[in-house]
Image 1 (cartoon, one colour):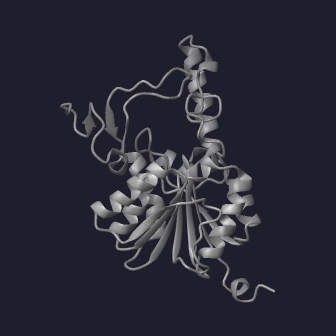
Image 2 (cartoon, rainbow, N blue to C red):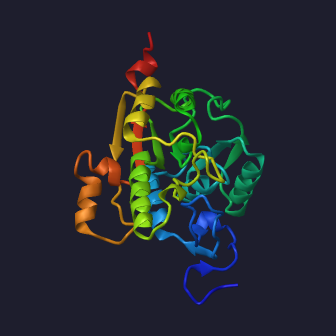
Image 3 (cartoon, rainbow, N blue to C red):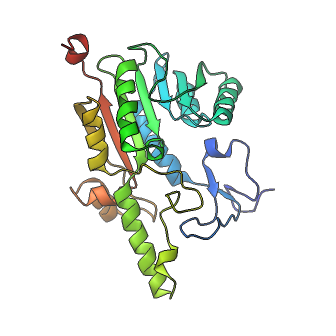
Length: 273
């Protein structure tokens, strides 16, 4: 049943996650999730696009999606012409992902396996993407996964990473707590969603730029570059855009997601000893 408001649905729409529909309620307190229908979140889709544009999937490229879940990122890359593969430990997600590939007649496969031991051949992929996956694993696991990525990537080819920015989430939490205090609410009721201690503690490995950079270095990705998407959650502002993308240190707190591209070494791949 559709509400009169555009891009809003009282019931979860078909392929809702793929199309960018999110709960139209709040989940930043300890209370149960308040579901008030489903709304298309264009700003979140914009941030998905930031990673996809940096990845730039091309026709006939072989791309690996780490933590592919139900196959959304695989589908986006496949619709751009790439041959797409995904790994995840959730059998239901893998089934859904493979059904999406069939629905859109895309070439590739989602496989139920661990991201740190994919089973793919050495130097097999043109590109790798990790979109909203690294927050689900510890730093030690990140290093093991990145070492596996380095193995399966072709020399000189990139991995693109998108993951929530812990610095931004902490700053946002402080703002919500202060706002709650002004309304005589208990600031301890406010939380960072999906973290340990909440009703949905999936995000055990939230990172900031420093911690992610350390993991990349430990895995042998010596050439890497972080990039920033403007903060537009509260509207368009040239001043906020400048702060969130151009001003060192400040942008590490005002950018909602961490974005990084890292390349597998060329020389060290051919001459490892």
